[in-house]
Image (cartoon, rainbow, N blue to C red):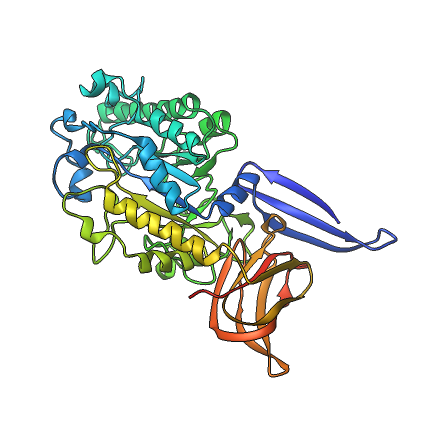
Length: 469
């Protein structure tokens, strides 16, 4: 088999796969989207965290997003994390099983958590550590220390300090137009600083997008491509390397395909993308020409009606229970999506103890459930049989495709050999990076995976059986 890959920018890869007979006559030609090497790492990571930190964490009030976007912080020097320990943040993320971590270098206040030369509203302006602190640097160093992939979130859509609302400075005068140009240049300067000062980054995340550079958006894509060519980019009207999964519940509906019809996630074509309650974002498009996997994001402090991405006083009761976090895991990682949990350092500069405890519980429990299958196999056939050494209870099946060859499976059926015959116990459409399939408890000596429908030969990386109490 010969594989020829053609890359178009950094957006997607088209794979042309040729199969040959003994006399080298081509039997099959497929054109399917393939992930980039960086997207493969994204899939394999499965779980990451978003660490949100900004000036308003220190005001002692409940976070009010609507007001925070339009109301500047009166005193910048409320920012004073006296026990700041980014190592502790990353140890907490690692205990949960996270493989990458994202830090809000800037968010809605416009304040930058590093030593910016283009944005004066930054760590240089603080009394804290005599204006010499750089939390982005500390964070990235901690990530590397604990073998976590470092990522940076750049919030430029809102800036309450400079009066920027949804990328725009309101007004039509020449003064306003000049300020808009200056803001775009400042944002581009910040992105260049962040891309050049901290070594190789796994991801740059522009929350809410970076908008269209021909309109109000800063022209950030060329900067990222120049200085961080291996970095995942999310996102603007030109490119997205992954997509929002349509909600902030930490879940996606099934099926969830990694392919998509456009090279951008939802910056344009909003009538199509937002239709039917974000159906396209949630499910993807199994006939799409672009590889753009889904993320499932949710704040850890999102229980019982709350939804907090930043620390608030007296909010420990709203940390998600372990059962809900496990449900998120099954309905994100187990449905071919990457899960991102929002973490909230407190004013002291530490992850709260209750949050640490819950995240450690999540890491322990997911490891307990899936670290050792009863048995496992793989192959490239339309039928795979998994033999069990003795009659054993089974209630979970885990499937993985070799997604470096694309998402090929279109229908799968799982059968168990019971009472001397094969009986169907589950079926589905999408496998992708991982499909966790719960089944009714069975006892059998063998189970079978059948793939009645696929694009070309299926490539099954893993077919495993589990008993989980």
